[in-house]
Length: 496
Image (tube, rainbow, N blue to C red; front, side, top):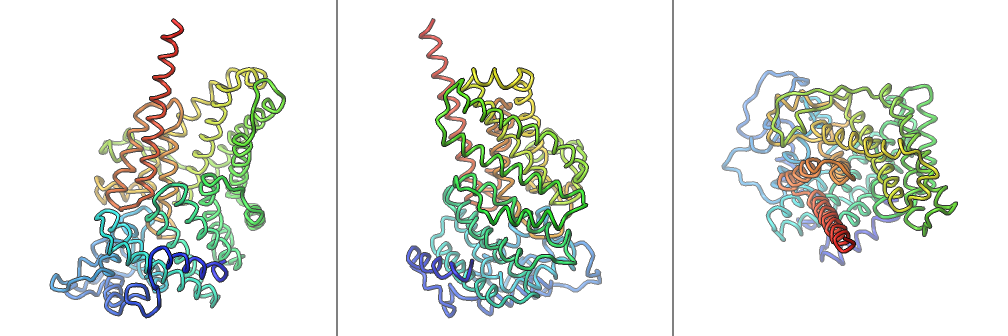
């Protein structure tokens, strides 16, 4: 995919941004020697003025031990170094899926040379968004173009030893789109191009004997991250998606986690039914309408059965304590047995909320068909299910993102542990889940307020345009509900 498409993307970027992006261009090519040198000192904790210690390679470390703030103050950082510092501080460290030990830091950065340009691009994009610095933004885009070229070269070389570097580089390119994107639909569409590339890269080397479930675990994480882009862009899932999913199921035969493949199929079914509902003129009481409602009910029942299997494969506990209410919803938090466990649960919650939300809308728009096909008890259950799952998404947040109000000791208790050590890569999907939970029908206003405030904090902390765009979506949704409520009240007054 990259061999075919990267040159077109680069040409488009040049035309749009006016960047040469040549390898010899100081702002568009590989990071300068000074940047590489400072980055190396950041990664190995050997920056000028840093004191040596006797800690073992696997001992826990704190973010300040790897951050470029250890560089002596007399050394001024150039723009690229500042971008790298911002990336490390805001997008890599201090997240539930961040490197925690010296061994993990070393493992992350040992394959980071190829992704260094995109790290700088992400960092500078976030900083430029917060500061409104156009020069910084131009350098960020130039670094992105350089990273596209570099990633294409990595994939063309096809060195088996460089698989982690290739995947990390491609996924980081998607993260740049999320940070830089100006609107939710455009952002997810652009990012999805890179995720498709990552799936193709990883699929080409499966099975991996040493990886969890022979590599199916990693592919599934990428496949699940594709659902939101395809939903937002109203694009059918490609045949290759289902072929890859089928291959993952073969690799996972006989293990409890295979239920994640069945969950993916259920979510894909939701996308298909949702597209049908959006593009079909439904007449209340007609067989077509009756049949569509019945199909949504069947899907909801399938989600209900899946919940028990997910609990067996991905168990978690709910805990409660005294924490800042802005950081921990209602003082509750979940303890998962891994980062992927927490993510799979929220993919499930998100999709089931949307399924029930669609049913609720069909109940309101088509009461005759609904009365014929759906018992009253099940219609009532839809609202209860939506509120329960929306609350669970909010409660799960400390397992996906650390609020700056929380101290390191507290966040360590929340962390589920993970294999990727990839920082904020999983955060964009969680932002969509938060938006869905806050805007779900008939949930308490408290849900909206809490989710909106989290999106605003992430925007101000990370400069991620995606968070700002989704917070604006939430505001528009609330304004729309307000207008509809006013219109309903006026209609009732006129009838009286």
